[in-house]
Amino acid sequence: MNGKTKKNPTLSTPSILGLFQKRIPGDDALLELARLRFRESGLGMEIHCGTGDELVEHLLEFMPRPQTRAVVHLPHGIDLLSKEDVKQVIGLARAFHGRVNGFVVHDQLEAIDRTEEYLAALSGIDSELLSLSDGPYLYIEYACGLSPDFYISLVKKFSNLQKVTACIDIGHFGIMQAKDYFQKIFPGMDICSLTPSTPVLPEIIEDVEKATQSALPLVLAVIQEITGLGKPLHFHLHDGHPLSVFSPFGVSDHLSFLHEIPIPFPFNDRASLDPMFGPYGLSKIVSQALVALDPDLISFTLEIHPQEGRLPLGPYAHLFTHWQDKTNGERMNYWLDLLIKNHFLVREAYKNFLEIQAGSGIFDRHMHQE
Image 1 (cartoon, rainbow, N blue to C red):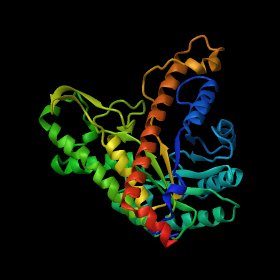
Image 2 (cartoon, one colour):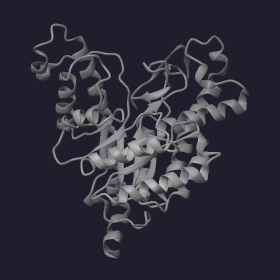
Image 3 (cartoon, rainbow, N blue to C red):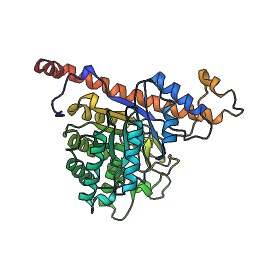
Image 4 (cartoon, rainbow, N blue to C red):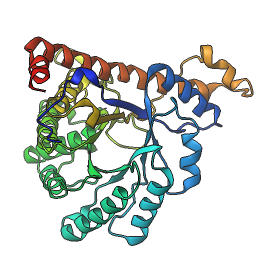
């Protein structure tokens, strides 16, 4: 299907998923809590796991809604230039086809010098996936620091493959753009090495913010290029800021779109900074994807990491009657609530897109054309 020839978008909706994981210590009551809250909100699941069938099988037992499909994010170290790793990916695809929509793997820096070898590996995987009835996709995620231009060129080189496509991680693209922009002003300085308490920050805050604000235009341009290929696409949605110190994993992104960055001095009459995208940027990103592709070719995962906080369990307390200390249950509930609030933002962005398109008469024209 050509992505520029759209059907009536009111007939389908993009798939919206959330990060479904036990990243807070505790037993499977945490996963049952996630299952219930995802089901109530309408979220699907993207799970992060190893290459063993057992863990994937266990997590799929908590599918929020029957007859839906998960996305499975494989370990960051998967090497598609390794025959053994490719064998593992294909084995998982065979084991879970029909239950999993796609598997996410990170891109690789080795693809720069071994492009043809990498493309040959993708072609071989594509053939294996096509041989499966209702086989899953393989999503190649922008993650390892390739230049955006090289990643786009790589995706275009495997655009002929039917089951191998892109995963556009907007946070990774955004942080890379902010780093590149800042280094042109301050050669040799990494913007992500700064924190709100860096002594020199008040002197360079305007440049930090210009670099941060350059993220959205770059992400929109990337989406425009890749959606133009007309292929199904997966998106990792999360916000970030180069000054962020909130991630328990030491990264500057994977934040909520509602997250602000406190600073210890006033800037523009405020004591905090907006993230790279915020709700406005998220809405622009969702719209950019939907301009070129039908909603049923798009899936979004809210890949937002846990943030510290506690939310009373309320109607879910019955899941934790065997726990004496409910702290981690409340921490999990807080994280899930954050995911659900961001889910609402994505749904609102989609609703706004539909209203704008309907007002322009574009939907009616497409219907008459068909």
